[in-house]
Every structure is written in structure tokens, then in C-alpha cells.
Amino acid sequence: MRARTEPSKPAQNMNPPMDSSTLQPPPEHLAPYSEQIDALIESGRVFWNRGWSVGTSSNYSAVVARDPLTLLVTASGKHKGQLTRSDFVLCDANGQPTLPDQPKSSAETLLHCLAAEDPTVGAVLHTHSVWSTILSDRFAPQGGILLEGYEMLKGLRGVTTHQHREWLPIFENTQDIPELAQRVRAASADGDRPFPHGYIIRRHGIYTWGQDVAEAFRQIEILEFLLECVARSATM
Ligand SMILES: [Zn+2]
Image (tube, rainbow, N blue to C red):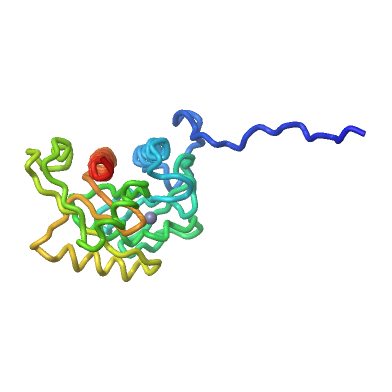
């Protein structure tokens, strides 16, 4: 007797939605921040397509108020290519939710809060790319990666020449985010080795920031490009 076969099921939703018109409106408490939410959702789609934010990895935020500091942060455990307008949490300067009944924010929220302490920062983006993961391991003994001589460095905020020397420090990974935030804070206070555009966590990913989502997005693109150049040239 012929085995009964189940009708084939459509593949699970493997691709991000095509545009914001397919998304439901945000919940009421997030409605004032629709523009930033859509910019972060779009960032997730692009980063997912480029392989920099696969699965539920990565997290993104935007500053929505300065006094007191309030951030819109991606909720924990959400697929970054398929974010919806409900997948965001309002947090205070300590990473605590500012309203009840919100989803849990990303485990790394404190790193966003730390970057956002700079009053010129309006958005923080974090990716888990292959190249940053590989290079962070290779360069860990040096404590960071020095990027210099690349025309694309001029895509970083305030950089006007390829002769710029960009230092990307590498911090050991941990699940103790408050402890990691302390190490990043201590390193950023060291005036000898500033890292105004970002840093890397070993075998984990990149953090960068900008005055708004668009600028932080550009900086992720530039840093990912430069790291890929370093990695590929090392294998030639
Ligand atoms: Zn991460």
C-alpha cells in the first residue's frame, strides 16, 4: 500500500518582508517613534541580507529622549531580518524598561546605554558578522585592529583622509554585560587610544554609533567593508 504523504507545506517565512507597508502599526506607546523604528527595521533587513545579523543575533537602538535619556532598543530574541514594529522596548539610562508590560530588551542593552551617554550619539548598531568574528580572534593578542590607508575610512564621521589611523579595540566576550560595559567605559577614558567610531567584542561582533540611524548604518557598512578587506588580503 502506498504510504500517505503529507501535502507539502509552504516554507516558513525565510525572507524578510519586502517593505514597511506590510507591517502592522506600532503599539500606542511606540507610535511617536515610528520613524526611528522603521529605520531600525530597515537596517535589520539590510544587515540580514548581507549576513551581518543572521537569526536573532545583533541588536539596534535609537535615542528618543535626552532628559532623561531614553532609548528604543530591539527586544530580545527577535529575528533581525523580520523585525516588526512591536519588537522594540523603551529603556532608561540603566537599561531598565521605562514602561510596564514591554517585551524584554536585548541582553546587551547596557552597551547601547553606554554609547548613548555621548550627547552626539542618536543611534547604536551592533552586528555579528563573519569577518569581525574571525578577525577579532586573530587580532585579540594585539588588543585591537588598526585600520589605515584605506579610502573608505573617509566614510567614518569626521575622517577626511585615507591616511587616518582608526583603532578598533577588541574586548573579551562575556555574558556579564555590566562587567563588559565597565571595561569598555574604562578603555574609552584612556585618551591615548581613542575609539570614536566603534569597537569589537571577541568572537562576537561590532558596535558602532552615529548621530542618527542613518549615520550609524553607514559606519557599520564602512567598518564591515574595511574588516573584510583586512581579512581577505590576509589570505591572498
Ligand atoms: Zn551581540
